[in-house]
Image (cartoon, rainbow, N blue to C red; front, side):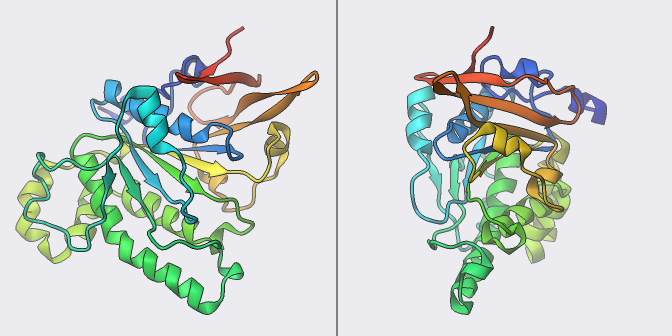
Length: 300
């Protein structure tokens, strides 16, 4: 596909009614950030988006869980209930098996846990020297495994992934979660496939160069959905909150807020598309429900 054709090819969110308001869906080659408080439906949104890849690309999306506190996000339960999809966790390998890396019979898991070290704090200013060094060691240990996981997924035909478990912080530049997210997005997702392979294979690159070149993919085809937990629960409060320079939201192509709005004497779930480069954004707030089939937009 040409660059323009790729921009016209939209990735479905898997949510009934929402693609219409997104001009057909999300744009591959870009980042979408979903902002909402805990329990508002972000994880289910991510599962639906990931599952929609099965029909569009012939391969479900993968889940990159960056939770640092050890509390379950509910991915397995949602996937099983909504789609009878049994998530298989990918175990991070300390040593990469370069010889069998391209063997398609070796299927990857659907789910990758970014951190095995668990801590109550994720920002540098909230930790002492030793705690921060423990996080840095954990990050360094998992970088090669993360590169191998994403690269292995993309060469097999997968084209979408979901990042979940990111906690709200005052200073994103001091968060171990955002440090990893920045690396994954800029050094894996937005980098040409050959250079990702060079980072992964290193001294083994030339011995595997023929195989690598047969499996290169286009970074412009990759869709990224980031679930970001907000400290605000009100949709109005999220929309009105100013963006900081360098903020994750400032670099996103698409931003969707999910929160509560007051309707008479009760609260309802609603979402608002505040930014969507490539399509006009609807001005209205979209009401949605969550039932046994997942999220769906309430159409008038």
